[in-house]
Amino acid sequence: MLFGLETEIFVLLAICLLCACAFEFVNGFHDTANAVATVIYTNSLKPTTAVIWSGFFNFLGVLLGGITVAMGIVNLLPVELLIDQNVYHSVAMVLALLLSAIMWNLGTWYFGLPASSSHTLIGSILGVGFGFSMMPEAGDGAGVNWTKAQEIFASLLISPLFGFGMAVFMMFAFRRLLNKEMRDQVFSEPKKNQEPPLWIRALLILTCTLVSFFHGNNDGQKGVGLVMLILIGITPAYFALNGELDPTPMKQNIAQIEQTISKIDTSLIGIDEKKQLAKVKEATGDLTNVLTTKTKNGKINPDDRLDARRDVLVINNSLKKLMSSESVNLSDVEKTILKESTSDKTGLRRFTDYAPQWVVLLISLSLGLGTMVGWKRIVVTVGEKIGKQHLTYAQGASAELVAAGTIGLSSGLGLPVSTTHVLSSGIAGTMVASKGIKNLQAKTIRNILAAWILTLPVTIMLSFSLYLFFRWIL
Image (cartoon, rainbow, N blue to C red; front, side, top):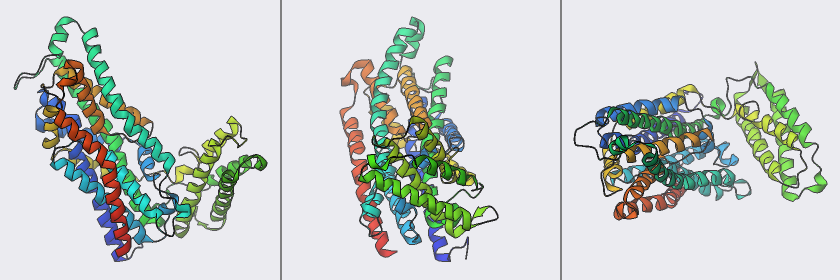
C-alpha cells in the first residue's frame, strides 16, 4: 500500500501523472515556435539560444502564474464526474482526455501545423464530459459545465481575430510613429547571418521573452489543472481539499450564505430556481455536519474530504445560477456577500481551488524542457509559410507584441487562450498589412484553418471513444 492506495491503483496514478507531463512536454515543443520563430528569422538570437531562453521563461511563467486558468479547466467537467467515488472511473477520465490530446498534438506537430494545444485539451475534456453524460451516475444527464465552456469558447474564438486586427494596427502604428530612418530599418528584411540594429534586436528579444513567459503563464496552468484532475480523482483523501488550510473559517462562510439566501422570496421564483435553492440548503447542511462531526485535530477526516468538496462545488454552482436569475430578489450588496463567501480568496473555494507547489514545479519543468526540443517543424511554418515574403523586423515585433498582450490579458482574466492561433493570426495580419491579402500563402492558411476547425470535433470524438473504452475495460 502506497499513499493509502493499492499497488494497482498507484501504478495507474503514476501512468496518469506521466501522461500529464508528456502532454505538457509536447505542448512545449509544439508551441515553442510561437515565441522563437520571429527572433530566429530576424537573426536576433541563434536557434539554440532562442529555445533555451524561451524554455526558461516558459518555466518561470508556470511557476509564477497562479492557478486561475487551471481551475477553469477543472471546472469544465460536471460536479458528479469530479467527485466519482470509483477510482477506476477517474482513471478512465484522465487517460481518455490525456491520450486524445497527446495524439492530436503529436499528429499536427509531425505535419508542421501550428494547431492549438488549448483547443486540443478543451476538446478532449468535452469529449469525456459527453461520454460521462451517457453513464447511469450522471446527474440530470449533466456532462459539461456549459457556462464555463461558453466563456472559454468565446476566448478561443475572439483571440485570433483580435490578434489579426491588432497586428494590422501595430504595423500602421510603426509607420506613423517612427521617423524615416527608424522606419526604413524596421521595415527592412533581415540580411542573412546579420544581427538587426541593437534597438530592434532588444525589442524582438523582449517580445520573445514576454510571449514565452505568458505562454507558460497560460498554457502551463492547463497542465496544472490536468494534474489536479488526476490527483482529485484518484487520491481524493489527500487532494480533494487543501489540507494546508484550517477548515474552521468555512463555518462563517456557510453562515453568511444561509443568512443571505433566507431572504429570497420563494413565491417569486420558478421551479428551476427552487431546485437550485434546495441544492444550496442541502449542501450547506451537509457541509456543516462534516465540519461539526467529521474533523480531527483541526482537519476534515480524509474519507470525508471528497463529500466536502462536492458540497462546496454544488453551493458555488447553484448560487451562480440563482444570482444570474432575474426572479431572485437579492440586492447587489447581498450578491456581493454570496460572491465573497464562495470566492477563491476569502470564501469556500479557497479550500478547493488550489495546487500544491510540487505540482506547479512538475509542470514548469515539463513545459520548459519540452520547449527546448522538437521546435523546428512549426518554426518553419510560422516563419516561412504563412506569408510570401520573409518576416521583416516590424512584422515580427508586431505579431509578438500582440500575442504577449493578448495572452497576458487572458491569463489575468483566468481564460485559456490559444498562443498558436493568436501568433499565427498576428503574423497573417502583418502580411496583409504589408501587401494585402495576396501576400498570404493560401495553402498554408487553408491547412491552419482546417486544423483549427477540425481540432475540437476530432478530439471530442477521440476522447469520447477512449472514455467509453476505458470505462468498459477498467
